[in-house]
Image (tube, rainbow, N blue to C red; front, side):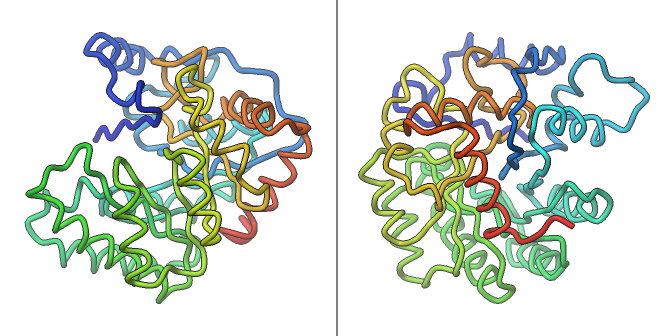
Length: 309
């Protein structure tokens, strides 16, 4: 299930050529060369290991008979990314992620129905009950990705999206789990619904896609902003401005792998081992030391998701 997303207005809609190139690269498994490892480890707050394996496989140099999940974990750890949050987008991927987190110490899980999934379901209530059952599991630490997406879902699907989002908010509050939000072209709706329902104690704006003004609104509410590879795009000055005003205690970093690969590798498959590129871009946008930023991001992971082991 492809749910590729981007952020800066000028890069929000990839051209047909870019889409074909990205799809072909993922099928071919053309992972980029690993960047210089981070000296201070961080975590990937949002990845899709299932989709990465399905669409791209694993980075080169890995025994093809080896466990692909362990291969992705090992590649990340070699580059200073020692923990991952596997995020569900439907019932099946959420169940897969919850089971995965029980087997791998480096992985925690988040479970949810993606906002573009909700309008497609014949029985939304049944799917939400399945998500709630998974939410009770101890290594499921997030409810997401949920939220609103007015880019891919038209007016006819908005009501179902909102019903689903409100239900996920309630689940996050009942189980004391972080709420992980997908927000695409829906900033005002996301804030309206959170304000209406009453936000959980911990809210994460996954793949933050707003400008500095929207970042300030989220920061005022105490929400965490998680920045993806899009912050490295030349056209994404708005994201770098948002990162510059985000307090370090509310900042996280992610891949959204296999999507949103950071520059200069845009269009090729993404994986957690590439996070150092994004972290260094964030440090440059903020004018801070990379190691200092990594230490803060790592601490935020424990605050939001608790201990991995």
